[in-house]
Image (cartoon, rainbow, N blue to C red; front, side, top):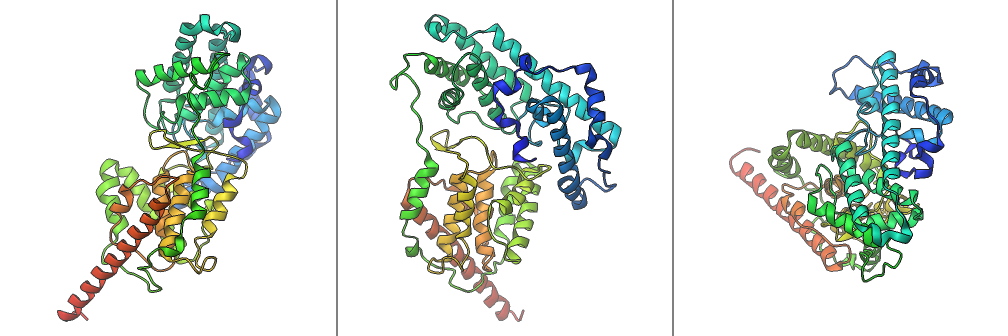
Length: 465
């Protein structure tokens, strides 16, 4: 979905049902009167695992759904773009709509598809109307917030649980929870930017995908919000703001003596006796979840094909892998909210130029742009770039590992083991940790080469040629 069609950036003023009339009974007729209704793409008659179906979803069904969203927005207003905000890993993570999944799964024959559009539109509108009723039932008087403390605590808890129930606490559900708490605050006079900051500080990255928050956590978030809203809230009572650890990483990145990294790779390709990454997926990811394991193996195959053709490394490339990692119908977008990691202890900011900065960093992984740096340094740095830019709402650790392996594979180096690379966490403000990663990669390369050489000598000694 195009970024301008994202419901994540909608303000309460843009979606408030009181400001935007809607006739639910007439919705079906409106949907069928719009231009895209006459151009529903024909679904290929192929198995659901066929790559041709995924290509069709990306090249035809997705653009058609975008066109329908634009047409609906022209008729109703921008509030309508949430009609595709499906549960779990649909067009956006963690939405409230169950009538639509994604273009790949929801675009079938014309009548059925348009019925789904209508149902999803009505469902999104009903959700907004239910939120408006909640907001009006619990007015927030900023001047009398001290007297309303118990009421506000209950309201905040109720809204969090309401969103958790509606979204099913699926992938990225907390993004919509952030938004709705911000909507509630802005409805009662808190400036939009202040509301977003209050919610961010109160939640602090502690809500997680596929996990409903426990009552103690919900209570704590509600209490922090109540404290933040008080007119006399001070640094002593309000939750302290976390620093931007992405900016800390970028400062560290420039100071790390990358040229000191050991270079076990040299210039020679390394062919392992076994596929370390595939083995790790089968013994770890596939045991946790068979579909997760298969998705990661598919992404691994695509990554290696990209490395073999010498592709340039940027966000557009890794999001193609990430589509398979997450098993989504379309490549996931760059995150649109601050991200958190390590139990909420690290916060990664977001700005208009964040994606462009990531692309500039990843471009430095190529040997022809930084000849003075060893391969181990370029692979480690690209891995940490993905970790700390944290471009996706989910699956960033897997994306970072694929990125590291891509940088190696593009220069003919593969590893026979990766489990140790997956088990160590690195901190954004630790230059020593960055160099430690280069040493770990160097050790993996040296050991992979040693075992490959031993296997070759054994074959020659046994007459295997």
